[in-house]
Length: 124
Image: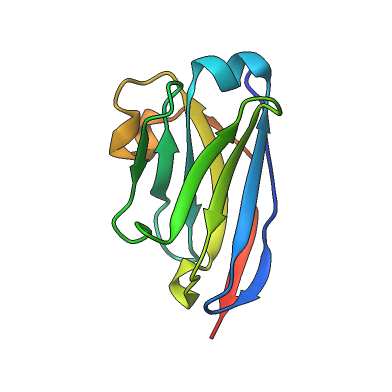
């Protein structure tokens, strides 16, 4: 059973930084592709960043240069470092996992396992 537990959300002013964490089982962490998605009120869920089991990464254009996805192998934890945050980054952020080979498309449909989400609020 795949279990994903996010943490690290909060409120920050524009220009600030936050780091999100997603804890997973060792098996999930080492064999699944993992990603971060977000959903703002009234909008569809969208892909933010993803990372393959070998460390390859993919980013949405809207966050390139500001967000970094990474993994800590010793802790079986996925991270999303978010810098230069903007009000439009405000959303519920979800960790996701799957074995789909199309993980780099950052498509919601390609990920079958989801965490409960953590809220990020950026004020201007």
